[in-house]
Image (cartoon, rainbow, N blue to C red; front, side, top):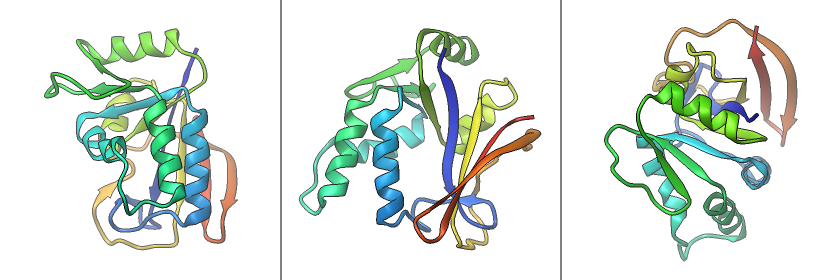
Length: 176
């Protein structure tokens, strides 16, 4: 049975914003390695469209970007969206009842499936479908934006922490 893991970069004041701050070289390598080993990724429609950036090589990319793109393309993707009628390569559109579809996905797969995006996590959290939360805490204050937890934070228990590079701490929580 697969485990669903929701993890994102977060500012000190609790916001996620891929334009407000990003990973340094060490953390980016961590994400490349992570993407290379996950069973797949579960996206909502909007974040999936943002991530499709990695579908085609760009001339300005360095080795690390090409490595991430390769890992992203090779990893299966499941897209939970009511507005999409089709999805790109190596992606499956989840149709019908989302809870039933996600429970079936967890039962059919092994390993870790990353949950991408606060909106999707806000739907899955009250259903008890997320097995682990990973907050990549950056020493940045954004002052607003999209919060990591878009709904009430569930009761959590800290099970790990890891310094990645010189300034990012990954905090790992499980439902209490």
